[in-house]
Amino acid sequence: MNNEKTCGQVGPPEDFRDLSLGSLDEIFAANKFSAGKIKNFFLQLKRQKISSLSELKNVKNISAIIDLLPFKTLDVVSSVKDKDNNEKIVFKTTDGFFIESVLMRSKKKISICVSVQIGCKIGCNFCTTAKIGFVRSLSAWEIMEQIRIIYSTKIYPDRLSCVSIMGMGEPFDNLENVFKAVEWMNSNYGYQISREKITISTSGFIPFDNFLLYSKPTNLAVSLHSAKEEVRSKIMNKSPISLEKLKKYMIEYVKRSGIAVTVEYCLINGLNDSNSDAIELSEFLSDVFCKVNILNFNTTIVGKTAEDSASDLRASRASFFKSVTNDKIRRFVDILKSRGIPTLYRKSLATDIGAGCGQLGFSANNIKPTTI
Ligand code: SAH
Ligand code: SF4
Image 1 (cartoon, helix red, strand yellow):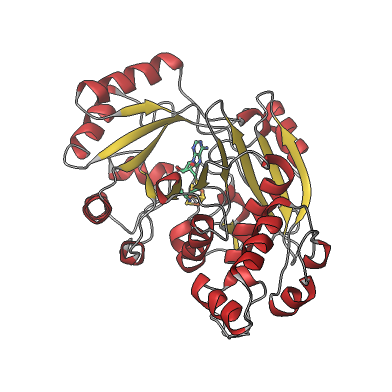
Image 2 (tube, rainbow, N blue to C red; image 1 turned 90 degrees about the vertical axis):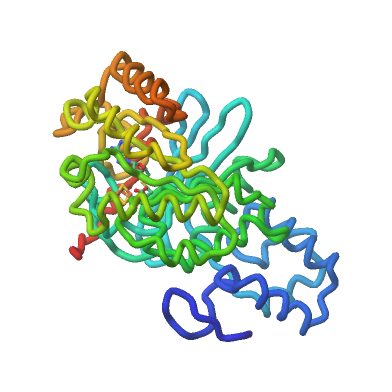
């Protein structure tokens, strides 16, 4: 087995999905595995609910593969469904921490929202994940295992249409592993999800330089939430990147990818929801090829299990931040549209089970928050 750098450490990988696809192909070639055998192995791995490779059925000479490929998994701790069959799944990592993923179903598509870190360093004021503090980044295999478990137990034989990398954590703070996972999602070994069906969402608090070096762009969502510095830092955090610099990065992304950047704007009562906020946002975005997704503020919660989270949410709606009325949403959207900015109100799914944007942050019982 090649030594490969994972999570900043040198040594053999814990799991073969921490390898690049190129290194994996070298291993297969060195061991003279036939294309048919490799294809079948990955097909079965995707479809079957297993906790070790030795449990895989319908793969001939599995011991040769087991010897070559280290494999690890996550425990499913709990899952909770809403009335529309969207589902929040809580996983426990091998070192005892909790992460959450969301399976979203609509008439047209099935998508999964994955986590990339345990907690988050950015510490936005309106986000549940921030309340955990920061523990560590997830490796590529941990990102992929969220998808593999959900696909094999809840989606197969249907097709997974999209992946949102906008669960717990800041993807730009774990780019090496996020990119590795994107390669897997996209590849024939993985889920053959095209790059335009994969969205990476960033708070924009970490410089985009490394992201822009990536030659195969995915969709990019930027969490903006205000075109005013002082309002943005109230909602999110003190920003080391000015809005002007953030805009330059967005324009550079568009230039390199040819894809419109998605701007996430969460409306919060009395903070960023006035007519003048909408006008200022439209002016800020007038020279950016983009589309705006308007979200409403979701109550943030911390519960002990997925079921607790849902009941905590129902029990306690008290929060410093408040959501806005439908009238306000309509007015805000209309102003942006009338000023030529493509805008959509994206109603958060599964908020009643604590699986909406900003709500992921399973209580993480034993997690001791660390500060940055
Ligand atoms: N760290 C990344 C992705 C995870 S957060 C980021 O910040 O972009 C996913 C989205 O939820 C982001 O757009 C974030 O700004 C938004 N969000 C955070 N808290 C929220 C809340 N309470 N209500 C609605 N959206 C929220
Ligand atoms: Fe981290 Fe995103 Fe939550 Fe901010 S909104 S704390 S960047 S996960």
